[in-house]
Length: 193
Image (cartoon, rainbow, N blue to C red; front, side):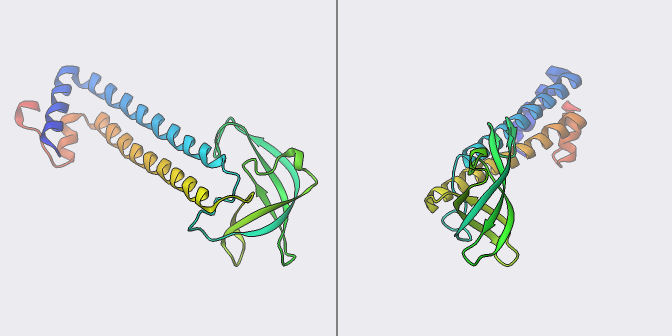
């Protein structure tokens, strides 16, 4: 670990005292957790705005299907789709081969206004044998889908790094600065213990 960081943290430990230092560490962990969640949900919101199947330029490919839309439900204002309100609808999906399967279509690719109608969509399934993990959407550019995929991956990456930061600050809060640096294998000099 960088000696400058260790020195700064030990000075903070002395200046704030054990309780103040721990409270500061918990506050920084909470701030990082909020940032990670907001960035992740923001990236999911951007991805949900894409009307396509999210196959991406390098994805599993798409096929055209017809979906007869059934019941719909509205999710939000905060959900796995991100921020905002989105429609998720049950549908019977009919492929070009005549195969019929049930699926959930969202976010807002079809809405409650499409109930009972047949809608032409694109289907992208990762498992082409059992047709699981399928996504549906309107025809759109595969490159736009790749861009959305990159935004989602960036959201996951920021969330992962903020998760590591949360774990680090909570460990500092639990152990205190001197024990934390001993735990990390960087014992502070004797003047700090």
